[in-house]
Amino acid sequence: MKGNKILYCICSLGLLSGCATYQPVKLDATATLNTKVEQLKVDASQHMELPKRWRSSSIGIDDGLNEAELIQLAVLNNPHLAAVQSMLKEANAQLIQAGLLPDPQLSLSADIPRGNDPTLVTGYGIGLGFDLQSLITRGARQSAATKQARAVYLQVLWQEWQVIGQARMLYRRALMQQQQVELTHNQFLQTQTNWQLQQHALKRGNATLDAEGLARTAMMDGETAWFEAKRQYSTTMHKLALLLGLSPQTELLLSSPEQGVASLLNQPVSADKLQELLNHIDHKRPDLLALKAGYAAQEAKVREQILTQFPSFTIGANSLRDTGNIWTLGPFINLNLPLLNGNRGNIAIARATRSRLQAEYRDRLTAAEVEAHRLVSDQQLAFDELRALQDKLPELNVMMQQMRKALAGGNVDMLTFTTLQNSHFAQRMKVLLLEQAVMEQTVALDTLLGSLPLPAGAHE
Figure 1 (cartoon, rainbow, N blue to C red):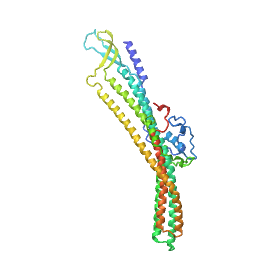
Figure 2 (cartoon, rainbow, N blue to C red):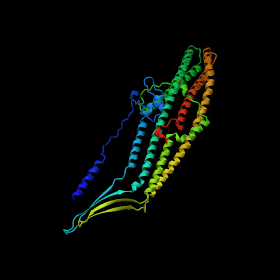
Figure 3 (cartoon, helix red, strand yellow):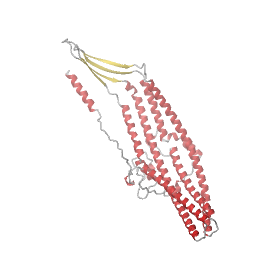
Figure 4 (cartoon, one colour):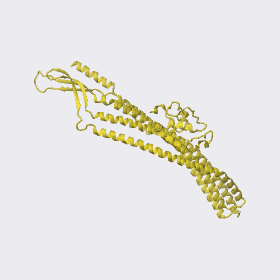
């Protein structure tokens, strides 16, 4: 009896020492946006998932942010990435759980006699068992958890690539929109000057009312275009601030590339080069590698569920004292007979999930190929139209200067001048919009085709 009490105390202490303690954590409902660029994290040297060409460059805030600096700041400070990266902790915890052995099963019982027989004593029983079924499926569980952890890592990496692509695209868009704001402002000032001249001429009786009205309308259209350009630029800068984890009210100063904005214009890839890139896309894009890893993890889960359908059994030993004060010691086996359930439902679910992942992988590959061809086609059309406009724009600029002189000399009417002026402005704006489209399509294609180098941990 004394030995049983000692054993009970030892087991209780062992159980208590291995228990986790509960600590309530209050949900933080406050926004975590910084209000100054100086508050952002700037050291990307240890962020091994970031390509080396950006990880090894320093960040200077005072002289304006270039593309490389924006990429680093976005990867280090983006709120969405911070939330996504918490998935890695969950995956690692699941990997630990898959490798743990099951706890032994301790059973205690008492058999209290009912009667007045003084020869009878209270019977006791103590048993210790172990579930062998979990040992059989442990290898499959660990394999599934390992592959799933890799899938989660690749999903996080793909989200990081999306943030890099957004930073590059917003940077290029902002640079082009700065030029659009400048263009529309100059256009507004020119139309305002024309209107003021016509208004003064009308007062002196040297211009007609319809000429003054045409000049006024052109000025109002120019002002509207200027405000619209500023609104679009403000929207882009707000998106860029949020991407960096900054408050929308934070002012960001951007710096142009050393070789000029034109250096960001790239010739569209050829059809042969595109097909070569598409042939290797399943080994380069993290989301496709993640789907592969997820499919492999599901294969292991299917195997685990099939192994679980076989009879599970627990083995152990019992030490009993019956009411006659006789102690016995012997083994026991508990069997779970798979007659009604047989784990058939879980097997069907695991197989259906595997089929879904396979279909999703094929769909992602098909969508990537279709989207890549569309992007290259659109980029080629935009590039050709841009070159055509750039070839003809100098002649239009010269003609516009001649028309201004003709208007000042009274050799052309206001309707003709306004029509040509609006066309000249539209063509110049079209050039900027086409340059912006080509730049953004380049970034979208880079992300789609997986042009960034994969970190060492992402390779199969």
